[in-house]
Length: 342
Image (cartoon, rainbow, N blue to C red; front, side, top):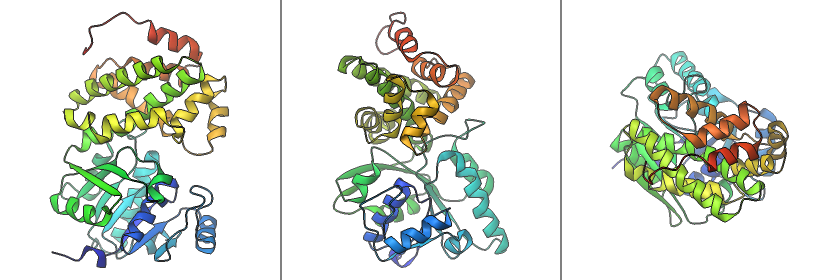
């Protein structure tokens, strides 16, 4: 068995979730590098040993190396964890490829990502960008599930799904991540896990809107339940597995983001429901709200596959067609009755 802990792993992206994952990895004894795009942010994190902008009150382990030099951060490292917003995923991969090319293509890469979304313009799956740039043989994996960054960073009990097409990579990553409070469930359903991670953000915006409008627990529960049905309907067309959508990366993440105000997507929806414009709501959150882009991506995907996704359509009409949240919600809740399961 290889000593995986003797080999470094780099986390690309020093937002709240990237920082939390880097903290977990470092505490578990991994040689961990955290790359921050912003030089000043990296300087402050090194000086203060905190990420006060995105993850305040969490002390960074002394063995966590923080760098804003991309080439330096990824050189000599095989295992790459990308934790950028999903719209920056391709750009990050291309930067990684450029480093590979400058090294004469001698660097082996194994790529895992914790981004929750699809390609912005094409609604393609992120795994396809890895194949396109690094080849089909490149080991790849995706982390997704009901996980808030702060709870992860302070060691609260957490479970997450790791989907991979490479058994050795999945085994090595599990060894890097698992501890007494962090558990991983393995899967090979990369598409299903990626879709679940994107779609739950859309439903969370809807749940926030419903609560902001004062619709109550009944409406929120109905939205979550029908959101799961919508997720599974699209997931079936993608050849995703039922257990993916009823598990951590599906139902688990859906419930978490729809019901807890640590969710940026839910808080964004709350602001919309209380009368804020999309720009005002985004300013209130102060960080990337992935569900805004996810709504456009998934709507495109639904059109490509001719799948009826009324919740996605309703949120799209609010975000991109300037429909009043109350009107869109009413139209959604008064749709023609269907047999449950359809």
